[in-house]
Image 1 (cartoon, one colour):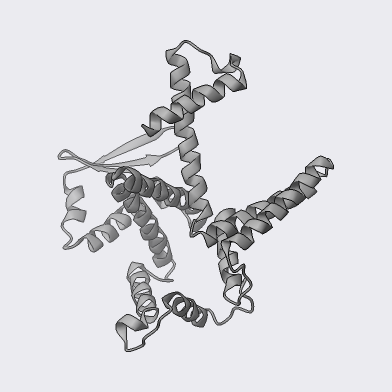
Image 2: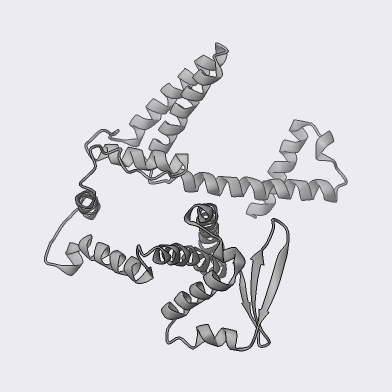
Length: 293
């Protein structure tokens, strides 16, 4: 939940319904309960405790209800990373990383309420894990393949796995396909070169085209289309291109160009609804050119 501190009062905003926010004002001593802590780590923990106890919206959240917000925050971090990379704008990333950190605080707080673990335990587990996975840094172990070492150490931490396909997280489909393929490649079940994957891609596209021409069932089209996507993810992996991030970038690029097309049409008194596809394509290409100049 957003928190604003002013010289007059400490304001906690919480959502009572889908569209209505109510504001509860506290005295000047409220910020001191947080800012009096010696370091930002303790400030964050105190902030979370205050919100959990005194904000009705925060108090009613559960592990289940937070999942949607966590997913949103992760994707907003991706968007902010894109701004930092493309426009050298880092301010948004700073803010979004804070929002993501708040999710970690929230989950740790809920776990602490159930006497499972707390934020200190989370930090301690992370430190131990990273030390264990970096023996080339914290011990005398030497290795030429850090990636293989990393995967091997992770396997030791998950000895209960009976298959390389076990414990793959429920990622978005493209990212999950990438993870599945990486797992399979660890035992050599992989194409050697990108050119091999390109040949496979043409094969899969041919099969999809055949099903389209045969007016195949939706299930068959979905199956063949999925094969094409899976192969494209594999090609991206061979080219060191993350399919999920590449598609996010293309989505953003298309949206910006489409907005530019709309702006050009409006400036010329044109209505996109009444334009032919050929004319819209010309307008789109003009918008593309203006944005790349």
